[in-house]
Amino acid sequence: MRLQARFRAALLGAVLAALPVAAVHAQQYPAKAIRFVVPFPPGGGTDTNSRALTQKIAKNTGWTFVIDNKPGAGGNIGADQAAKAPPDGYTLVMGQTSNLAINPFLYAKPPFDAVKDFAPIALVSSVPLVIIAGASSRNPSPYRKMVDVIAAAKAAPERVTFASPGNGTVGHLAGELIARTAGVKLVHVPYKGAGPALSDLIGGQIDLYLSTPQAAVGQIKGGTVHALAVTSPKRIATLPQVPTLAESGLAAAEVSSWYGVLAPAGTPEAILTRLNAEVVKALQAPEVRESLAGEGGEVLGGTPAQFAAFLKAEQAKWSKVVKDAGVKID
Image (cartoon, rainbow, N blue to C red; front, side, top):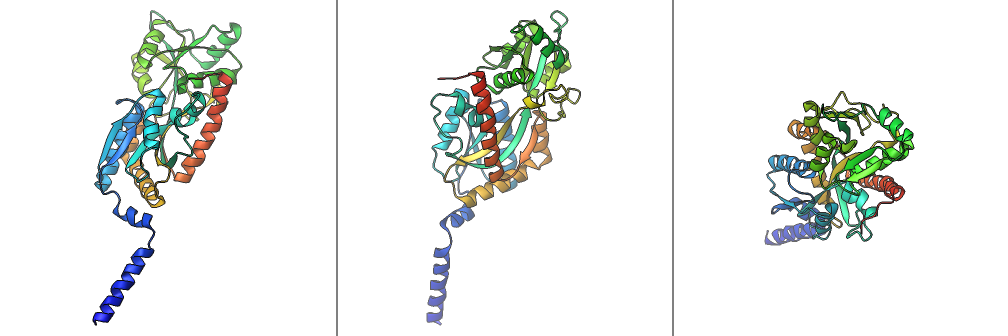
């Protein structure tokens, strides 16, 4: 009996030793809190998406997440910290269009490689921009539709101005893409954030602003601005009355900001698979979908491989826009 017991113990030890180390770690994962890096300030779209998602995953699983806001350099600082963290599943990051698909071509020396230094987990959501013009009684805009903007720009090149939250932002490059698609010149006016740009738009100092739906909805309902189009392929639930660029004859200029969860490259495959399953499950929850819809977003999800293919396609698209616009940040 003792011999049989020793034999069974030895056999069990051999089986366990044969199991992939990653699989054993995945079964034990997570054994501590997960740091979730948000490369932008609290309160913005990246932050609210991150909190809605991690709160639901925590509720479903009992896991603990620590949100770590690391803003700066267009999202590069936080993303770089996440890329250089140990690939053990205990550091994740909410990446998005600017720091993963635009910045690699915008900055002369990007601190990380968005494709090689990260392991995609899952896409979260996409959020279009809303093209708005002033509508206050003191300074009403003459532009009510995109055709009005294009006609004015063709009649008087470099007359129509558009604002963005800064050089190289999605709003800036989307405006450049719209202008090139329409064959006109729009004059870019960079601002330090949405607040000052909206103020000058309402005051009549600038003609157009490419806003997030979240920032625009209240102003639209209040009658201080008028929405000309959304940049998504279809109309959005928060602004169902606003036509798309395709309806305005500018389908080739469709763009959206998007969000996705990633881990440092080299994170065990079994952990990535587990994380993907939990992210996708959380995205199906009504409260999460409602939160993302409130931002004007559309839930995405999908597999890590789909995210990887999507990122490469987005980089190809935005690299051309950056090059054509001649935008660089040292």
